[in-house]
Amino acid sequence: MSKLLFVHTGEKVKIDSNDLLYTDGSYSKEVWKRYLKYFDSISIFMRKDYSSFSDEELKSKFNLVPDGFSFYEFKDCGGSIVKFLDPRIKKYNFELFKKLVDEHDFVIVRVPGMNEAIGYLNKIRKPYLIEVVGCPFDSLWNHSWKGKILAPIAYLSMKRTVKKAKNAMYVTNEFLQRRYPCHNYTIGCSDVIIKDQSNNDFLIKRSNRIHTDGSVYTIGTIGALDVKYKGQANVIKAIFRLKKMGIIINYKLVGPGSINRLDSLANKLKIRNQVTFMGPIPHSEIFDWLDGLDLYIQPSQTEGLPRSLIEAMSLAVPCLGSDVGGIPELLSSDMLFNKKSIKAITAKLKEVLTDDKKMLDNSNFVYNVSQKYKKENLEKIRDNFYFNVKGD
Image 1 (cartoon, helix red, strand yellow):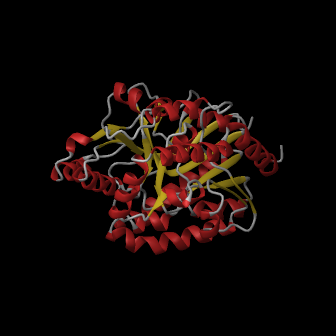
Image 2: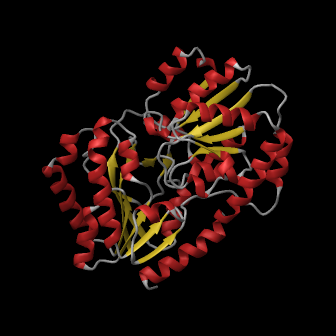
C-alpha cells in the first residue's frame, strides 16, 4: 500500500464538529482524486484554521476533503517576524515532519513552504517531489514593509531549495523555472482542472452574450480579499474613474478574508453599490459564477500561473491581467496592463468592454490558449512524470 505525505504550509485546514476536513479553492475533490490515482492513502500536513465557522458555512463555502484522509497540524509560524523566526516552532514542526516521513512511502512538498524539508529528504533518500507553485519574494515584497524585510531571505531560501531538489513540478512553463531553476528532473504542468472543451459551445454562448450597448458590465476576480498584492483595490479605483466617463461596471469578488479594507475603499469612492463581496465559493460552483461575467480580470502584483484565470479562459470569458508571473504565458500583450497602474487598468477596461470586436477576439484567443490545459493533455504529462519519479 503506497502512502503519501502531502506537505503544504501555505494552506489551512478547517474542521467541523464532526471532524470533517475542508480546504479553500486550491484543493477541490477533483484535485485530491488526482493524487489518489498514484497513491493508496494520503496524509496532509498543513496549518489549522482556527476561525469560527459553522458547519453550514463550511459546507457551503469550502471544499470537503474526501473520506479517509489523515490530517496533521503544522504549527503556524506566520503573522509576525518573531513567530516566523522562532526556533522552537520550527523545531516542533520539523520533528513532527521527520516522524511523518518515516511513516510514509512518498512525500510531496509544495513550495514556497517548508523549504528545510528538502535537505532532509535528500539526506535519508526518501522518494519525493516538490511542486513549485509561487514566488515568495514577490508575495512578501508586495505584502507590507515587514514583508520587504523577509522577501530577500525567502527568495534565497527558495532558490537553494529548488536547486537541490531531485524532482520538481512547476505550475508555470517559464516564469518560475527562470526565477527558481532546478537542474534535475523537472516538468511544467498546471494544476488547473477545467471543463470539457470537446466543442465550440462555449465560444458560441459567449459571442451571444457580448454587448457594448452602454449598459452595465459585470467583471470579476478570484483571490484572497485581505491580501493587498491581489490588486482588487486598483480595479475598484479604476471603476470609480470609469463611472465618471459614463461606463458603469459591477465588480464581483470571490475569495476568503476580511472585506474591511476593500469595503472602506468602495464606500470612500461612493461606488459601494457597484462592488459585491461573494466570500469563498466551493470549486464546484466556480464555473457557473465565471460564466455570469462579461469579463474576468486578474490584477495581481504577484502570481504563479493563476488557475482561476485559466478556468475563465476555458469558458471563453474575455480576460485581462497584470504583466506579472505566469500571466503573460496565458494572455497576449494587448490583454496585459502594468501591475500597479490604475490609469492602465482604466484604459484597458474601457478599450475592451466597449468594443465588440475586441471582446470577440479576446474571447477566441483565451479559449484557444485554454485548450492546452485540457485534462487529458495535463494527465499525460503528469502520468509520465510520476512514472519516472516513483518508478512504477
